[in-house]
Length: 320
Image (cartoon, rainbow, N blue to C red; front, side, top):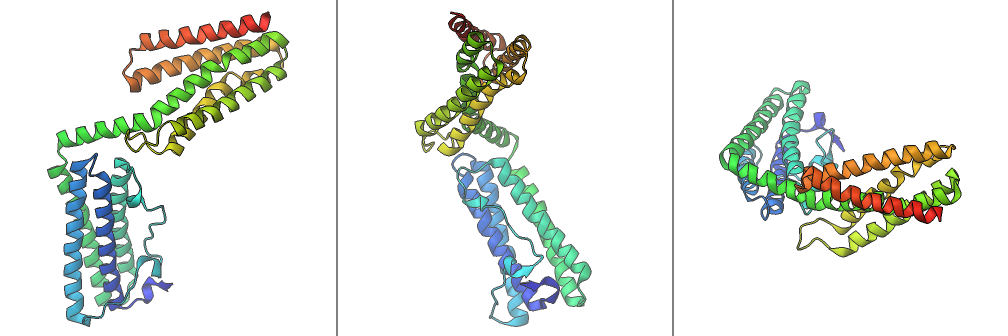
């Protein structure tokens, strides 16, 4: 890799041209990934891609006047210290997260401007320094353009609509599978845990039963969620993601009231576990109210009734 300071003026200009072309294609990828669900934001990125193409044309015209038709291939990854998009290619991922795309685009323009300005400070050749300053100003102009386009195309109504779509996707992909797992883990493991507790009065044996029930339920729910829907039609996201969220939350739901049985004293461990169960049920009720638009009292009644019935069933079975 060459150091940026070792690049000639011709190579710097060629690098800028390649950079503009790459950025335009990234914006096109964002536009295509957002078009179905976020058409206004897709239009913004279409306009930004067109502007990048226009800037590339201007740079290439200037390059041809100074150096002719031969354009050396020099890219970000060929230059030490240049901006690298080291993360996974976000513009190729589906589905695209709206906020992730917005932040990535903002960082692209900001980092490019900052790099050009810092490079200009260390450049020895006056013409190269001037070129770097001009490139920095161009990148600053891109950032202003993005803001202007967002204000013009992505008005308040369009932004609110797209934000609501993003919220709905978040609920479908994360909240629903996570809530299903948390409810299953918190409620279904109550019976085996407290049955073992009141049958043995042994905190360590109860802990092992709770661990087995929690981990087993997590694995089972994770696979069940992943196999239930591939997300292609419902927009619920990739199966492995939903399955992971559901499985992890199921295990967490069971482990919450299992961990208190690490306390050696049976009565104390049981009391703490019951308090944890109450907190879990309250958390489930709040999540249903916050994301599923269920009135809190109704959500609390439904969850508490189910939890209490399973809790009583565990105690009765364990005491028999």
